[in-house]
Image (cartoon, rainbow, N blue to C red; front, side, top):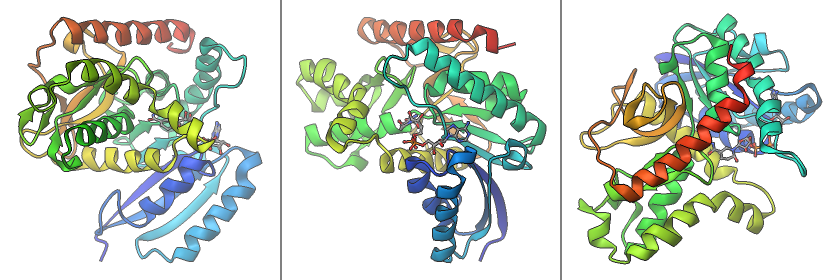
Length: 327
Ligand code: NAX
């Protein structure tokens, strides 16, 4: 029996991640069995027909926790009073498009949506950016919205999940045995999946997996290139696993992180670990259910530090490419 309710906006709701995500939110997997859900679904006008089909299917599930569904192409309606804005919709990279073009075309979307969030959402609204390039889109959105930086996130959970499974499979253990695996930096091939602070059954990964060349080489590149490998195999980009990561990220942020554990999400830096302040950077984070803290006190030796510098430099370059959008 629901005792609370939450309003959730999903953009790009008729897209493939949207199709894998909405049913899980409506089923109560994101906010739990005592929270009723009100969905605001934003799409481009051209996709409203397809979105109507998704709405019909949501209706046909008769989810007990689903109180209302509002499909719209109006950003003011989409973000009105919202508690959680899940920004999935974005323009994909097309043939011949430079990275700077991609940053700018999406920068326009996230500026407009950020402003609409600032004007319409609840003051405590939290925003999770999934649409790529998600770290820099989140930075743009934060500036445009005027929301406190601590309420803006970009998704690195899919990368964490990919890395955890690679380590479990290599060591012949269960996924649940792998802990404290954090993704540092950008959600892009420069990310660093930090196996050096991760554990398997409580022991350092490097004690359990003696193949150091695999850890430094194939492990990191498999995680970094996993999105491309899925596209090659499936003929379409990751959708169900991305939606699963969205559900898990929000669940981690609204729950208290168990003692000694952490999870991956990108948040605006205040300079931690030498990351320039303001960059939306993937860190290991712990939540108290309403706020979060970046895990502190970790030491990075030369190899890890060199990886961090690469991803920091990429994000600095992205910020430079959109500086005209950052007010
Ligand atoms: P789709 O192309 O299937 O769906 C995107 C939807 O967004 C479309 O229906 C489109 O009409 C809509 N849209 C575009 N501009 C919009 C706007 N201004 N307002 C509202 N809706 C808009 O893509 P999908 O596979 O669902 O992926 C969505 C985004 O997630 C992409 O940018 C993708 O790169 C990104 N991803 C991010 C991941 C992450 O870990 N951060 C992993 C998965 C995914 O690659």
